[in-house]
Length: 415
Image (cartoon, rainbow, N blue to C red):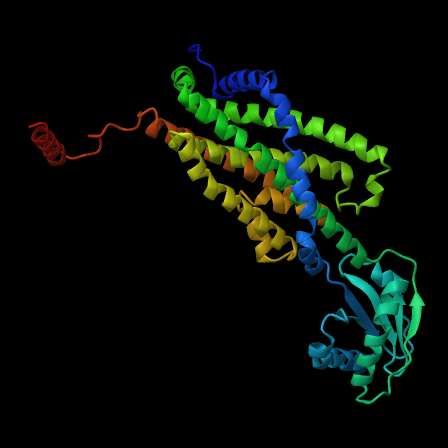
């Protein structure tokens, strides 16, 4: 009614202006070539998360025996743990069987509530291993040692362990595959965010230097200026990602690659990609809003580099924190990683690969959006206070004696 644009409408004006100016600039072509070097480095460092994946997907060996045999086997593993180490996975009692009771090992290994890689049944005198061929062949010797220890036989009186191969995909294999997908998704999200978020900072510092930002701030609210710049840089980033994905996908498909070669995420590939786009947008906006706040405090490029380095290191710590939390699903560590705004996109993308629940993603996206608004307003407030000098008057909020002392001090300084 008063002729002024709303904050969102003004932000869209700034976004269209910046998007058009960057997209049709000469440097945009070289920007598209930029990811070649980070992707090369990321490929060489791809084995860093192997330990995290192994911890997140530690398989379990189910025990379905009589109550006495099951307890004796667990006690034997506890006694021999220093000697066996990780040669035998963690034993989990699936069921204590009664006399003559039969147990379906294949059905138990398909239960998603546990992480079974194989099941040991029978008795301590004649144990039987059921599971994938490679698993039971690998664990045949350690199970014989455990059974002998449980019987207190000692020496070389090891029982003959029967093998029952099952042709199925166990929950342990599925969990391990999903952990690989989660780690890969986190790494790609982190690389793209760190590669592209720096454009926000350079754009703001450039416009501060030529006084354009002050002209914009005089015409529309500073919140709209910051929000518009974030949207413009996000749109430019999506253009770059689309080009890279098209070229890379064509090369990958042309060389015979397919998604079937990789473990499928829990929510499925289509929804996983959609959530990946949403979490990239939120991660970019969160980090970009923080960079805008830094740019409002920096007057030179040197100050920008000095102030942005700690933020970059903190973002790297957030990435490692989210990767560490991925190996501990259902714990307070994972919950903390999902709540902290800057680690939340990485933790939630990993959760999409490991869990089928969708409601946590909706809550996380809402929370991340609220955090973006908070940091944008914080950056705008800092810009108005430190650059535009439009904060409260110096004498505001002071008592009469304080104002009188300030005037006397000013007169003395003039003399």
